[in-house]
Length: 200
Image 1 (tube, rainbow, N blue to C red):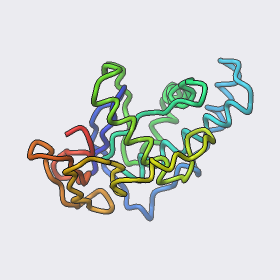
Image 2: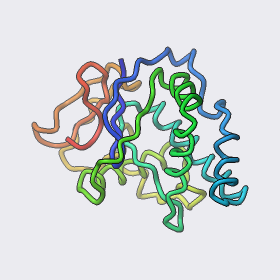
Image 3: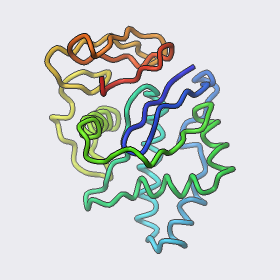
């Protein structure tokens, strides 16, 4: 059993995962209907819709790669929440969203809109999400230039903190995991205790 921790509009959910070799990758999920809905219902251009789809695929990719990581949908360079809106549109097609989530993760990723914005935990998760994105895709979101400072620090969880202990499990399923209440930051995203990376 794996655990996904999602902040700023998300919660902790246990997902029964299929073996990696049998799961599709996000690029294989057909999101044309979601993209078309953004153009038809919200008046987005094809270029804007395609950009949001590309970032949503990257969002799903990070969820699949790091199931114990705290992820927050990122904004574009103009401060628009196109990625989050694209996700919401996907959710509205409930049957498709359920099928896509089960294929990718083995269970549904639920959206919880009741988490407070602007908290210290959210700020921490935003920074870690940005660093993870930079390390994974070697660029900034929505085609922005790479900030090389995002490549510093812990390679497994994108943390830069004194006293950070990296007991990482590699695949996020059976790694060492320290509890942050014992000093410093530690992570591992293992699935046996319900702990995810960050926020300790």
